[in-house]
Image (cartoon, rainbow, N blue to C red):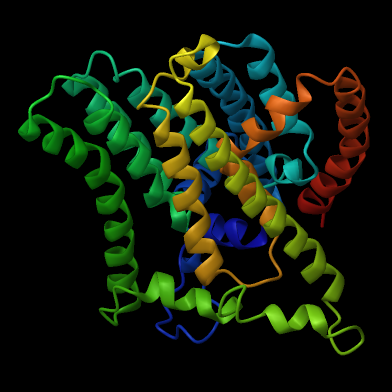
Length: 350
């Protein structure tokens, strides 16, 4: 949160030293909106003003994201109980604290869901208008998080592969409209930083991430190093549990989709709208790979799980059949309200 506030307040660093922490590791859309909101409401000159705007934006974006999640889940599975369960779980799972902080997850989730929903609606009536709306939404997601370019993959699948009776040339054009904006957005930010730091290094935005760690696998030995030798051991363990949950739910998601596909002509499985439904597996699997390769161990991996939203359906399929689930969710939300309040106060007070 402090990094994003730093970008909103002072702009990006001009240092070309990628062996030190630099704020151009953090992508521009969210701090730009923090800066814009702070200036519009006159909070730019107030201590913690941009952080306060960031918190407000996170709540707003998360609310919109939940609406889109409900609509998308209902359209895909034609099940109101599943759609409701998905919304409540997204808000109640332990890592949902990031949706109440000055983090990018709310914005990224909203843009990802919006891009995919638009592209999903094009599966039966593909048109240029759907493509030119879904592609830029994916591009905005790419300007929010380093892994955002992956949103272009399900968008391209839904625009170019899922529709029937399209020529090969038309499919190619739609695929390009789905992928190119996200790739162009990431490349443009890389070029901007390269010009700003004056080194011409187009890889600076990715090279600087190594300062925080070489990747989860490289840091694996840390969980076997106990305190006091490793003062972050507890953080490493909790983060690893989040990663395990994410990987496990991704595997279960793939397995469930395979089972549903095999029975796609029976009962409610028709509502899955194959082959469009495979776009969600593509997104969930592809989104898991880059963080696993590049992100260090001591991160809240569970927050990445929440933005890989199809994984929530794996839990929702089970929870919607359990009567006590709503009580557990209510208790969880009550406890998290205390955590969220404390976290927000820490961000917006000196």
